[in-house]
Image (cartoon, rainbow over all chains, first blue to last red; front, side):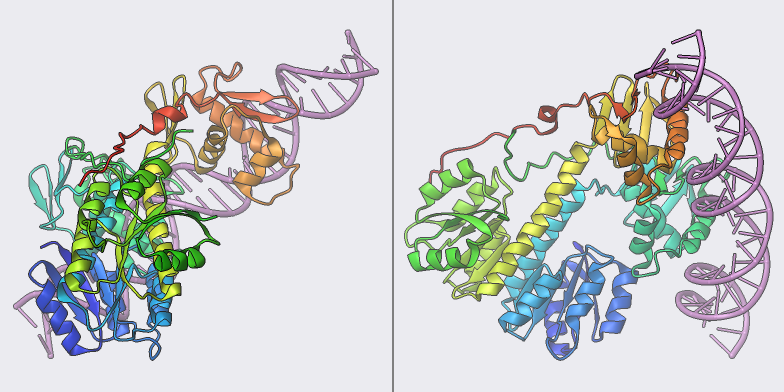
Length: 250
Length: 250
DNA sequence: GCTTTTCTTGACAGTTTCTTAACATTGTAA
DNA sequence: TTACAATGTTAAGAAACTGTCAAGAAAAGC
C-alpha cells in the first residue's frame, strides 16, 4: 500500500471507477457527502484527498479552504465542470490539481503519484521521518502496525494516544506546538482546547514513562509544546535527496 | 516581479500569448529550441520552466528527464497533444503539471501560481532546516527547536527569554534598541517599560554567561540597547553549491 | 440489547513564568 | 568628586500554564 486516499464525490460511478483504478495501490475511503467526508479527513488523516467540488451547485470551494486551514494534505479536485472559473477557484482555494471528468485513468494515477512525490519531498524537507520504526532508549514504536513497546513489553495505546505519540516520533527531536499537535490529531478544532491534549499526554506518560513526574521520553517545553528525543535509527537512514534547484551564492 | 519563467516552445503564437498573460508578474525568457532552452535553464536559473514537449523532431520527455537529473525547478508541460500518453509521460518524467492547448488564460496563471506556492513552501522548509542555528563561542541556538546549549550543555530558557535571545541572534552583530526588542517580544506596549526587559536580560545572562558581570555573549550598548556577537555560521556554509551540467545532448 | 472502552469536559492543585517595584550598581557629564 | 541617569539585581505577588483526577458522554465491542 502506497497510502490512504479519501474520496468525496456524490457520483457513485465516479467513486467506483476511482476505486478500481487505485485500490491496488492505495487504501480507499469514500463518502458521498461533504460532512461525512470532512469527518473522515480529520479522523483518518489520509495522504491525499480527492474531491468533486460540484461547482457551482454546492460549496466545495469553501470545503477546500476550510481543510486548508488546518491541513497541508494534498487535495485533488475532480469534477465534471470544465469551466475555467471552476478550475481557477479550486486551485486558488488550495487544491493541488484540477482534473476534468471524464478523465484518463492512467493520467489520474500519474497526477496522484506526482502529488504524493511532491508532498513526500516537502515532508522530508521539513524533517518528517519516513522510517518504519521509532526507537529511543527502551521505547519502540512501529508506525505501520500501531504497536508500541517499552523495554520489550507491549503497551496498549488508544487511537488518539497513538496519534500523538507517532506524531511526536515522526518529528522526533523537534518541539511541536500544542496548536500543531491538536490540529494534526483532531483536525479542525478550537485551538485553545489544550485541556484534551494535556489529559492525553498524562495518560500516555502513565503508560510509557517509569516516573511521569520526571519524563524520560515526552518532554514539555513550557509555553510552547511537547517533544520527544531524536529517533535513534533515523540518523543512519538520513537519505541524501538531490537538491531541487540550483541556487546562487551571493 | 514574482519570479522568472523560461518558456521553451516552438510555436511563436503560444509564446506570445503566454508572454501577454504572464509578463506583468514574471520575467519571461523564451526559446524555440531545446538546446538553447537548456542553456537558459542552467544559466538563468528560472523559478518555473514551461515547455511544450511536443516538438516535431525532438523528444521533450527526455528533455524533462534530463533537467530533472540536476534540478528540481518546477516544470509545466503545455502541449497541443491531448492524448493520455503524452500527459502521463510528461508527468512521470518529472513535470509538475500538464496543460492542454488551447488553455484558459486564468487557469494557466492559477496553475503556475500554485506551482510557485508549493515550491516556495519546499524551499522554505529546506532553508529552515539548514540555516537554523546561531553559533558564537560556546553558545548555540536552534531557532526551530527552541533549544539553546552552552558548551554542549542544554540550557533551559523561558518563552520570553528565548524570544529575546533569538531576536538578538537573528540580528547578530547589530545593536537592537530597547524599544525594538520590547515591541518585538511583547508587541505594542508602553515603550518606557524597560524594566521588564532588564529583568529578562539579567535572567538570561545568569543562564548563559559564565560571569554575568563581564558578559561574553550579550553586550550592553549604553543608552541604546543590546547586541550579540556575529553568527559564526557564515552564509557560504549554509548553501552548498550543487554541480551544474551545461550541455544537453540527445 | 448490554458491557466495556475511549473520549471529552471541567475543576483543581502544583508549578512555572511573568511582571512589578524597590533597591543596588555602574556609567557619564558637569 | 558629585549628581544624575541608565542599567543590573532581587524578591514577591500575580498570572498563566501544566498535570491530574473524576464523572458523564460517546463510541466500540459483544
